Image (cartoon, rainbow, N blue to C red; front, side):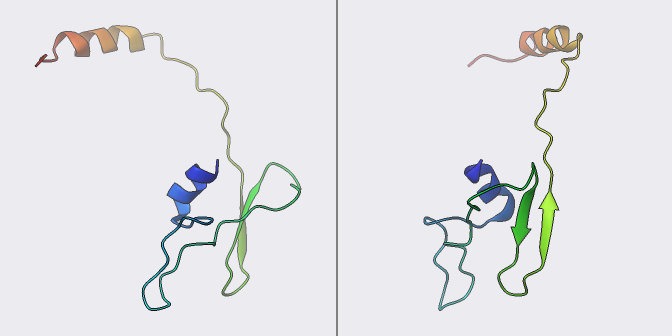
Length: 81
């Protein structure tokens, strides 16, 4: 999950961008609380303390029954090199 949050926000734990001349630093900005209040992920800015809570629904999406036929049609029209 940490890698997904890094991709979404641009910040990282210990391996992030170290910045240029003290600016644009993203290293060390991603951290995790010791406990969770609920299912929300809370993003909090260090500069002004403003935060936002995000709830992510990771439940499965039902498969479209026509997807198999569409995939076969696509694969039949692909060129093989």
